[in-house]
Length: 118
Image (cartoon, rainbow, N blue to C red; front, side):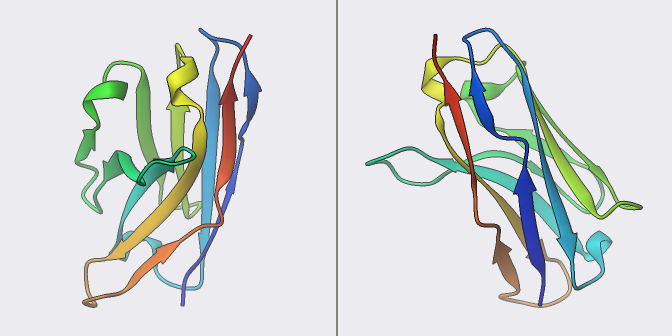
């Protein structure tokens, strides 16, 4: 069982920055591909960024060039640096862990609210 705890959300003005953190516990962090998803009211949850156990990354087109995902395996933590935030980035952001050694072994955090507004 893996526990994921997100932090770093909040209210920021357009053009501002935030860094989200997701601390993992309960298993071997390096065995997991990690991702950040977001879900706005009335919309489906969507992938924002993903980083594999080998540190390959991919991003949603809407955040490319503005967001950066990274991981620190020594701290069991994945980060999402968000720059040049826009009102359309307003969502609840969720951390996700996908095991590379066990089929169906997926976990979600509780989510952290990001609001971009002037």
